[in-house]
Each structure stands twice: as C-alpha cells, then as structure tokens.
Image (cartoon, rainbow, N blue to C red; front, side, top):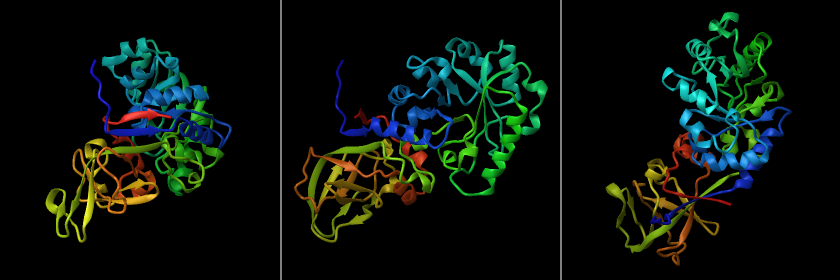
Amino acid sequence: MVEFSSPLRLHLDGNALVANWRILKSQGKAACGAAVKANGYGLGARDVVIRLRDAGCRDFFVAHWNEALEIADLVPPDWIAVLNGIDTINIAAVKELGAIPVLNTPKQVAMWKESGGGKCHVMIDTGINRLGIGRDQISDELLAGLDIDILMSHLASADEDCLQNSEQLRRFQQLVSQIKANRYSLANSAGVFLGHDYHFDLVRPGLGLYGGVSRPEMNAKIVPVMQLKSRILQTRWLQPGETVGYNATYVCTTLTKVATLSIGYADGYLRLLGGNGSIAVQNITLPVIGRVSMDLVTINISQRPELEEGDWVDVTYDLQKSSLGTSLSQYELLTNLGNRFDRIWV
C-alpha cells in the first residue's frame, strides 16, 4: 500500500496528557475518569485511551456507540460509558458490545428494562436543561429494577463563579440521598476545581486532560499536550504595495519575505486566525498575514529570511489565547483539528 508523509504534524505529549490526568485526580479523593468523545477531543481517542488506561484510568466517556466500538478492544467494554443513550435500532448491538449506556429519558429507561436490563448509568438534569431525566420525572417506579452504576449530572457553568453551580450541587446532593447507585458523579474539568463537595465518587474531566484551561486555578497546573507543525511550501520576496491572499486584505508596506504553509481552515486553522495567528521559530514570533484559506496560510518571515521551502515551523495554537482572539471555545479549537495531520506521540 502506498503511503505519503503529511506536510502537517501534530506532536502530542503523552507524558503531559498523563500528568494532566494525575493533576485532576489529585484534587480530591474521587476516582478520575476521562471524556474521550469526539476522537479524544481531536487528538486521537485510541492513543489517549491507551495512555490513560496504563496510568490507571478505569472510566472512559464517549458520546456515540461507534466511538465506544472504536476503543472497545483496548479496555473492558464496561469501562466505557456512552453518554447519548440508546435507541430501539441499536439495542441488540448495545447488548452485544457490552459498553454501558447512560440513560437520559424515561423512554430510554423503559427500553432498557424491556431489553432485559443490566448495568447502566443514569443522567439526571439538575439545571443545564440538555440531556438528562428531569427532576420532575423521577419516581421510585421509574427507577425500580435498574442496576445503576453511576448516577450523574452535568454542570452548566463550572467555568464561572456563579450561583448556578451551588444550586446544581444542592439539587444533586438531594438526588444522591434519594436514589441508590454504586457511584455518583457531577464534576467536569472545571468542576474539579470548584472544591471537594463537587467530586462525589468520580470526576469526569475532558478539556483539562488535553491542555485546556477553563478556570484560573488550572493555569499553574494543566500543561499543553499538543504542538502543531507545518512545512513551508514556498517562499518569495514581495515589493512594497504588493498584496497577499484572497481579496488582497494584506498590503506589504516594505520589502517582505513571505512563506506559504501547508495548513488551512480544512485542518482546523480557522479563517478567524487570519491576522491574529502566528508562527514561532526559535522564540521569534512571525505573524500570519492575509486570509487563511482552505489549505494554506501565509506568514511574514522577514525576521527569519533564512527560512526556505521544506523547512518546518511551529504553528502557535495556544488554546486560551486563540480562544480569546477568535471568540471560539477551547473545545471548538481542539475538536476542529482535521485528520490531515500526522499525529506523532512522544
């Protein structure tokens, strides 16, 4: 089979990933799981699961059943929780795979019972009004006969200091006192840093594992996991007055050396980064100029004129700074990373 190397590389630090998981785990006495949905937040679910499994993680959360199937040969299937629940079409395959469904509605509870039941997780809505059984729908009759491993809810605003957090905590504590389950879980990455009261038996971080920082307390603790690299496809000198890119949005004011990189919005380097993005070469920041196109980005390399076609450069992709500069969430910046990178774990 013919294989080609990519002009795009995503260098991924497995030690940093594990270090972040251990930091999140160390904030309290609760066990620490890992959200690995959306292909491990874009970094590669299988590689993430292997490293966290070997570090001691025993609970992995995905959104879809195909995501569970993708990692089911790496861990016992009942270590995998599928957050988006079940439907009648897939119930037989769900039973065969053995991953554990998170039941989100009374209809799903009924469906699970009718299929013969078995271990399950249950999501209760405490205020995010997204997935989860409403508190007004909870009854002894509804939950009777369920083998609930994890009773869980999800915080809506854990990245902020607001009353909603304490109100959701109060509601969940009330449910914990009423509903029998093997384990209880509320906190995501940001929720871990709200304090021990939010931890219960299991925390379920996602963003923090991958280097995202959603609360100030995380800044000195969570470390970056990824580094984008791109190969220079072409360089040229431009005269003052010449323009760069679509719609001529950048005009050279001096003699300028420009490099074209093999990265664009199809790779998750979005158009919003045009004029905001930068490339780092030996601690010198080189600005992105002109519009980001589907496959290409242009940078001003006048400060590093020795750079030429074929050289590799680091694409600055700091999640916090890029989020502030684009108004996109760190989650979007991670999961938008495309599949044209050679993902290289170190």
